[in-house]
Image 1: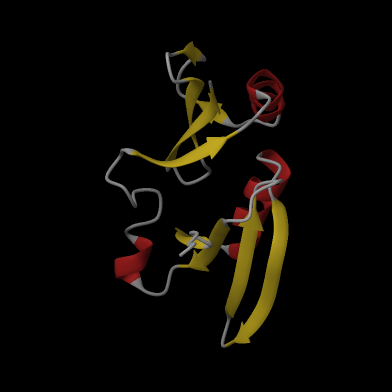
Image 2: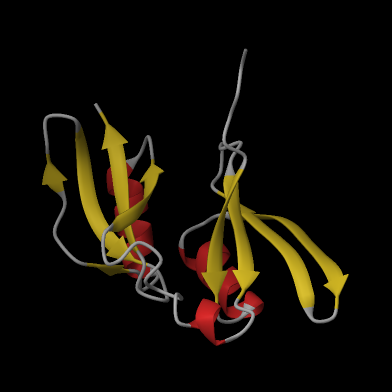
Length: 128
């Protein structure tokens, strides 16, 4: 049996500002943006070369809005693998992505933690 994780939901404040960040600053590809009616959209962004992506879901109500930027309680919750750490780090930094640390060379990868536009923490990783 083969399985794969297709999408993970990320609660966002606004569809268009989230698309601008993930596509414009991180370099993801907008692979879906369908009107679902009633102000809802099915918005999917995918890292280049990846089969999985993020479903950007606009918060509906106060409970969901309170989770924007803190879906994992302050932990790194997302891990973006790359085969060109230095190039991606430089491009993302130039685009204004907020890295919380300088790149580290670890036994398992080159890694640096960054925040998305809402404060969710991500690892940019180039595995060894």
